[in-house]
Amino acid sequence: MPKQNSSGGKDKLGSISKKGDRYLRSLFTAGALAVIRYAKIHGTGHRPWLSALLARRATKVAAIALANKLARIAWAMMARNERYKEPAALMA
Image (cartoon, rainbow, N blue to C red; front, side, top):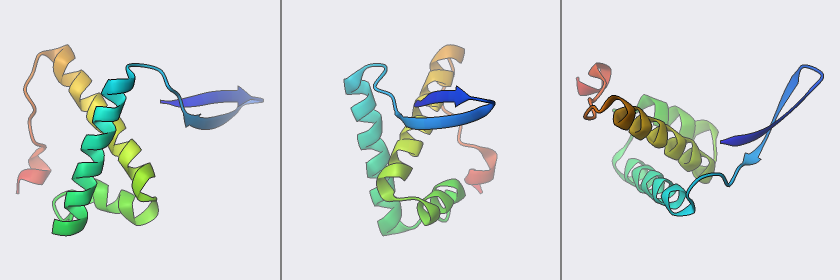
């Protein structure tokens, strides 16, 4: 989660904060880097969000964004007590 400093109605986002469990953060980041490494070798045709992100951001920045997305998905699954469901658009 980026630090936020707001002044005069302007939002300024800073570096990623070090809140939360350090080990869990490192696991999400390592998992995201593995997904990106796999995507660079095998292609990202079935993941348009990731391919667009990799086209405009550095690999490590994209990894943090992907780790954030994975953490949000994991939290939603635990909060709703559900299993992961692949989005219908990606199943085709």
